[in-house]
Length: 228
Image (cartoon, rainbow, N blue to C red; front, side, top):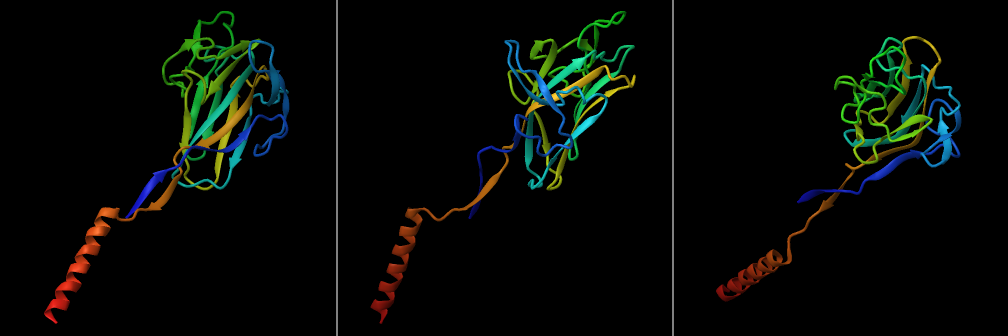
């Protein structure tokens, strides 16, 4: 008998960019806030270089069919205008196995002359398919510009993909249809983990069935001896 026993979740990749940018297609970093109390850290893209462009994380050695969770912090700097007349200003996260995981417009403030509801992102609808929201819906930190948490924190979206191959490409990207470098993004505290690893164990008969089997064989031996 063979049974599948789930294993504990494991981190397969993590990076806070304090020492390196391993795995990413760009190494541009800079210092940005992390919270509302004065904390700062190094962010990938913190030098404002990720404007109207993307950066790719390559993951190797995955197990096909396993589910992997994604956590990261997203910093949105500049004049993100949502879906209004000065946009649309998109941020998205795309998985090479699962497609779009985040695909929505974001608003940092209320642009002059625009409606108050021009953001399509919310924690409940990271694909932007839940209608228009107010500016900064789902924001976790506001210190100058907003920070959104993914994969951790109360009420924030849990993002995941099922690996379709041993290599996965995760694309973090902004898109401003105005082609103006007035909006940029940065990411920090990226962690990829799996909770679907499995181990194979073999089970053996319990002691009671073994004892009964032994008694049966003994009885058979005695019966043959008496006949002889």
